[in-house]
Image (cartoon, rainbow, N blue to C red; front, side):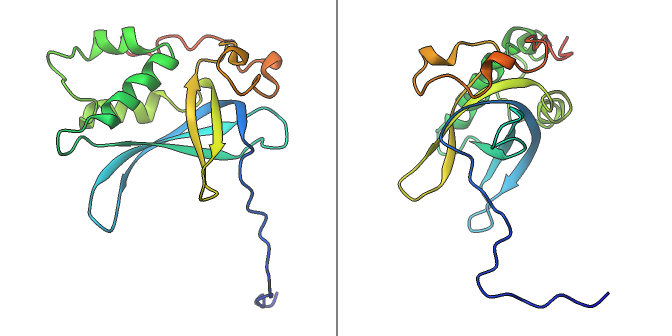
Length: 170
């Protein structure tokens, strides 16, 4: 075997996820640190599992650690738990009186263990710079046609059994 040589205009098959609703599942949860200023975010990956053109493609939802009195990241995490029908059972295990923030090592560890593989649907939109972003996340059985942007691709197939359950929070 010989070493490969570079090619002009090489195309490695990088594709953007199409705009619209996608049937999928939650992926890995990681801590991301921005090199420029050291600010941290939780990265929640979502993966299209529709069997269609975007099958296997992933997007990332960033939830910034609270800073300067801003709690946008806290709200995003709460919205993710709500969308996956985990909010009630999560709050039983991690009462707000004892855990006022989602950005605690033990909670993040549970996210990393319990969220991957959970079924969901998500809406992807391309911004003015050409980047695709997840704008909405809902449970696997939500009728996305009522949320704007049409029905999720292959929504009728469903994803998993339609139950997100409590993910073992309690």
